[in-house]
Length: 394
Image 1 (cartoon, rainbow, N blue to C red):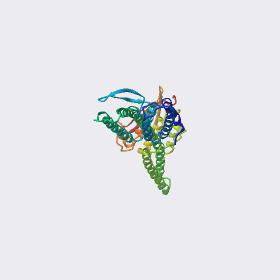
Image 2 (tube, one colour):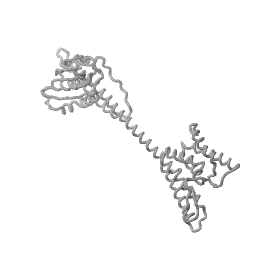
Image 3 (cartoon, rainbow, N blue to C red):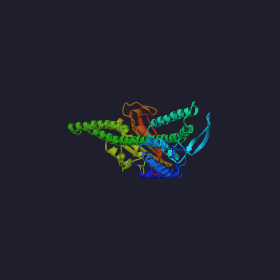
Image 4 (tube, helix red, strand yellow):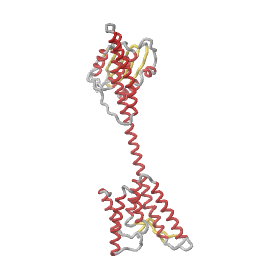
């Protein structure tokens, strides 16, 4: 159906038809009733072409091609045809020329497939070229060659070139759209990875503390056997939940639909984190003042990951959390003894592999926060440290 927003385009295209009326199939000037009928008919045909230009751009293109380039009173140039003594208009200009140029451009812009238009132009060029050659070079020419030459040049100049320009604009728009979608997809993937890392850091830490407390209950000699068995089951369940969490996080990182997850609130910050770990049975010492550290910041994550690794890989080992501030920088260090019999490793590659992807993600988080990260195991101790901008001063 015609759209109201296409009405201004139709009015603009009708202006040259009214002020430069022409019968596209007659070279003679128009006058009287013939002039009125030609103008009214041309405006009605343009109304139909504009109405079809969105849903059927190729049909609109064919309609204006039937009106535009076949005859003209003015043209871009007039040439003398050889060897016959005939002149012909090249690039005809008349009242329908603006409509031909505009709707050809819109057809190139709106058509999903280019092949139908290419076939149309190919047929016009082949048929027009054959007719022009026969009428000009034949032994007994019976047709005026200027008709075919004018029509052929009008199609090439006033229709094919604008259509090509429209296809070029369409390709550029599609390229920008693809680039924008790629950027959006990359942003979604980055956000998904961040959400998965938050889930791993928060829930993984809590599950590790649950398993640690359950292990302490399992080893308690003053509890009945059935309670120790229940604690053993709880510890195993926490381990199974951690494994399922890892699988769910893997699914989250590859899912197509966006995921929204609110971060877990940690009002107590690092001091509360250490207190909860101590209450779970860990031997944790906090050195330095954690006041001002963002409970959702990189420093909190460093301490959380350090305590989680200690609870998972060296249960029962004492842990020292140290925070030092100097010249606008804060250094966070988490150190614990290695589990008995653990292998001492020099620069930190194997402990990171053993601990999974937690330290890798933590290193990236610290880097994005403007800090430096290091992890090492030496002299029977495992230590991670991060130098960060002082969050309290910031």
